[in-house]
Image 1 (cartoon, each protein chain N blue to C red):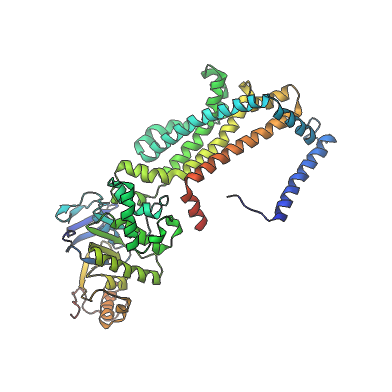
Image 2: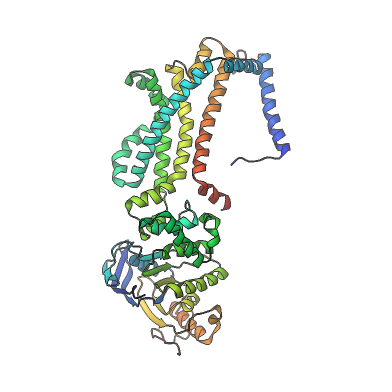
Length: 265
Length: 263
């Protein structure tokens, strides 16, 4: 897929009269997996809200494939930490919702929805209601619902933040599997260093509010990645680096602060 | 919703009702006078049962019930339509809230029963004035619950729908309406109860026929057992139609029930 490039230039977003984001610039190649890592309240979600088109920039510009972002669009799929499935729709109709909005006939949209449910491993739950599913399953439905629109960009706001550790790990692997097939550009917000290191091609580290990007880390871990990666030496070294950036006072030795560290290829 | 009890609990509950009926029987037959309240003119359960049997077999019953049910449903239907439409509009638009809600807020604290004299003056027939009283009684619970339901819609669901390609019209039909539905059903169910309450009062004052009129005229003509028969019919039909509304609502919202059971 050649679609899904993102260009954000000097973006500032004000919330309640105060800057939540300050001079943020980033660009993403089509199909790139970018994690934005930062402490709570640093404006990560604001960045995503602006990309989704739910928040208007005060300064700067956001372009996806050269087009300025103006309001929400199914090309930019959004997944929140707490699922936003419609409780009154069965799982399959939740997934098919985007196609319904496009006017696709019921039979055809259900067929496509079934294929996506299979992709996330929930083909047996199409007639359940969201409240009957576990938290991890709800997020899988949420991801399937967004993917049915073939978004150029997948925007994920701590999508696994509310899940227990084991489920989170499974979901991360599942997301990578799905992404390997569809290759959409992903902007994934998290405050979990392990998660960012495990998932991303590139990590952008943000400062506390007003959020700025203070570091960029390229990750060359081979794909497909598996849970064992998190114990590798390189992973641990990068984790220490991120900890150092996010909690500068917690560690006595501040090394390489603000310097991009490429992983040994 | 319906709780199932063990047999011994059911038995206890049945005994409790039986004890009350027995106490009533004793108090009415021995003409207990407690000073503040007297059972001197209170008919006994036996007399009430006999009067009820008589009413059920007479054609009067259908006339009275038919008149009441017609009035309740006419007023209630109008209140449901207007309450839901206004509630949705007010809940969705700040302009309409400011334009429409203030006069309604002024009228809301006035009990429907207080409208009776004015209603008699305003409407050409007493039939219409009684329908109007039930309408007023049902309107506010339906209206307020609808507004509450619409304003309580999770904004994230709306944001999500917009991200998935919904325009304003689809957001309304696909998100706002179903999300507000449980609250609307609650309003409809409460409104049904108040509609009966208001109707019975209106019938006592300005009715010909109707179960409220029957109860009041029984007092006037000193058929005391029939007063209680009328009371019982009012209770059964008021509660029955409220339950029907709730059941119908729940049947339309299986997801709502499910969510409450599991979480």
